[in-house]
Image (cartoon, rainbow, N blue to C red; front, side, top):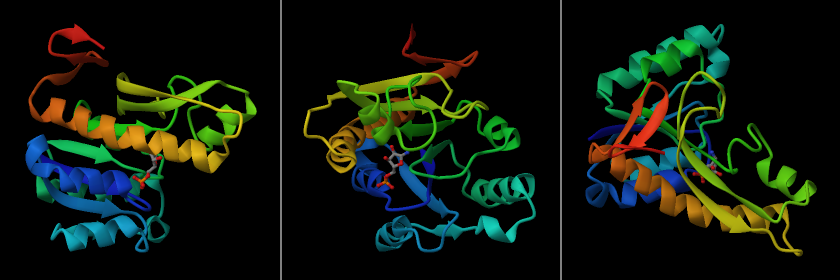
Length: 201
Ligand code: GRF
């Protein structure tokens, strides 16, 4: 399965996918970034994966930028698009183009805490648990149908950093799982609802 991964930063989720490509039944055909200093690009180059960098500041608006992204990405014929810390709001043009074949990972128990600073918000709310969600990407930000979630406890001594580390450990488990399901043809989006085999998720 040909997969294109989009990153803006460190790319540790990208790394878990790179390391497990064979086991997951995927081939990462390109890594895309909106920032040329994203460490994820270094990870890709070290793995011999082609990289595409499109700096959003050099485009007139989101529509023009997303059209350029699509044009570049589609040269690699992605069957699945994986957002792994890609810190851009996507236009409906983009989300429609990859409808049913684009996943994101969001560090909260969606539908709680859409958007940024999720660890801080969970701590400030006094929550006793937090987590992470892999979901299909639709037009609504962090609003597509969930595929898999992992929960972690919040302890009295947690800081944003310790909580983020605990959540990250779960990301490295659930994102490869979701990608493997998709590669096996078991995970589908039907009428904006995620299905695993024939069961609604
Ligand atoms: C992760 O926390 C993920 O949940 C969020 O962006 C972060 C990416 O981390 N969407 P990394 O770049 O994979 O290390």
